[in-house]
Amino acid sequence: MSEAKLVPVILSGGSGTRLWPLSRDVYPKQFLPLVSDESLFQTTIQRLNGVKNISSPLIICNKQHRFLVAQQARNIGITPKSIILEPIGRNTAPAAACAALVAIKEDPDSILLVLPADHIIQNATEFQNQLALGVTQANEGKLVTFGIVPTEPQTGFGYIKRGAEIIAGDGFSVAEFVEKPDIKKATLYVESGEYYWNSGMFMFSAAKFLEELNKFSPEILDACNEAVEQAEEDLDFLRLDNDSFSSCPKDSIDYAVMEKTTHSVVIPLDAGWSDVGSWSALWDVGKKDECNNVVTGDVSLEDSSDCYINANHRLVAAVGLKDHVVIETSDSVFVAPKSQVQKVKAIVERLKDQRRVETISHRKVFRPWGAYESITAAKGFQVKLITVNPGAVLSLQLHHHRAEHWVVVGGSATVTRGDEVIELKEDQSTYIPLGVKHRLENSGSTPLELIEVQSGSYLGEDDIVRFEDLYGRTSSK
Image (cartoon, rainbow, N blue to C red; front, side, top):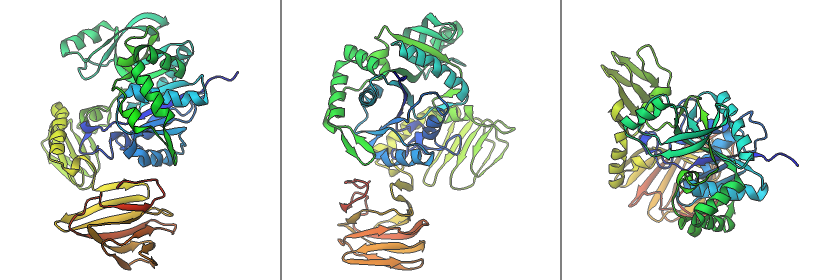
């Protein structure tokens, strides 16, 4: 009998509002290259390279991120076992349950490694060593969590109190899960040496997790069973049934199972872990200059120290800054003392109440066929730079409220306009009248770039009626 595969389950459904303005609803922090040239999502997958008997990952994400997930996986040479689409966020227990139900269909003995997509782990070798210990425990029917060896008292994390030793120095029963403490309690926890930060990383057999979930939270399992049974395959994606999954109670793996089971085990992990929960956390793990600053992009500092400065689109110059964070994007600038960066959540909530687009997307928005970037907009018109990947085709569509003028500035375009099909080269243009069916295609081998000038009474992205689409989209995405 062959050994059960270790199946990575990558939880990629978060919105990452604490890292605004870089992290946005349609492009959250797990897909950003915050500490290297690759995104947190990509490095989460790649730190598993070399793990024995491991399968391709199961990825669970919000449906609006599906093409981003597929593209980023493809860019690092990964073909996921499945990309499971959540119609709505329901926390980690339902996500893990659906992953277990999918994995167990292929291999009833599957061992799941549940990992958030947005963590940093600097010592991949130590991480893999502890995973090997977890596999042994999971094969014995234990539900394993990885507890981070604390480096300081932290009030932003939950804690795990260890119980009896199971593996000499490297594995313990779980005595207690503890909510986020105040600083006095956190200090006592760290000084005792008996507590770990709760990492939100788990390992267990799919069958054992479902068994315990059925024992302690059967309503979650029932809803997830129905959501998976009625799921629809869509291209490379598995769409969970909307009604079934939406009816599922919200709960974490901790609350639903780990705090109640008698089979939980905590394995300590000391591998340079961070959940990248704030801009100050990125300063903590970043490479610092001689003045203890962490800088990214075009930055010029004078008499400034202990700062995190991230410039994405233009020069950022600062004089006399101490312990500050400055984040620059194409449409927003965020400035705060490092000690107060968590208050960015209040800013984001206020902007959302005002329906500001800056909380939803950047000026550059990625689509399965390429991207578009807003250049300027005013009443009655909008100008965008459209980039279409080689071989990509936009949907056949029309607009009720706007006309479009396209000017090719690079590559070549095949344009369907009503009953016509025309070819456009660099410096050539065409006009798409309001209400006319049209389609844009790049049949060349280089990216197509064009300037799109929209004019009309309403210029929202939801003014799209699709007739044909290679990507199975029915909305404006």
